[in-house]
Image (cartoon, rainbow, N blue to C red; front, side, top):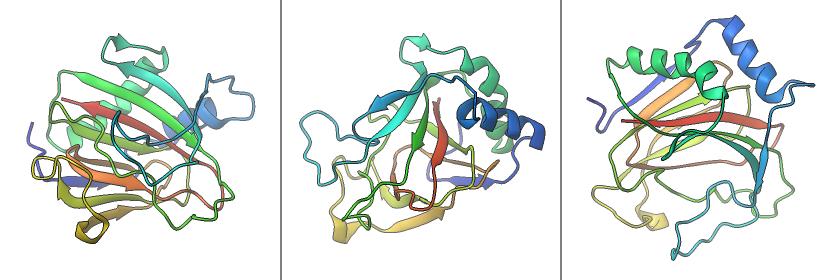
Length: 198
């Protein structure tokens, strides 16, 4: 796959009807979708220090290292495939698929970003990040790259490469070894679908 050191952003990656169906399943009034509480939306890896705490959310695992973990995968897979096709990248493995729903929190340290991270530190991968609804809470991708920096870069050494604002139907795809994070939403809920493909 030809994605190293690249970032793509596409709006309306799928038609409006499909966008609405995704939104209704995940955040519709009577959707019945299974969400699970997580105490930190971007926890540090075991043994690493964190300076960011108190960022709970709800999540749903779609695909994990053991394979498909949710029936939602078959429904959302065409969106992931279409996004990858737009970058001229083919893939053979879904290594991880999750969705997250964050709520505006009353944080005194709201200006502090969520924990800086890479989703998978073992294998190079492409991140496919789809925005389910319009929201604030930008995704921030740094020039800092895991192949050069194995631990979280110090604050004064972080260089922003791209900021992407959540917009319904928008998808950002990027080299998964770029260190990245997100801002907390302040005006409403933030809902994303996050896949790692190889």
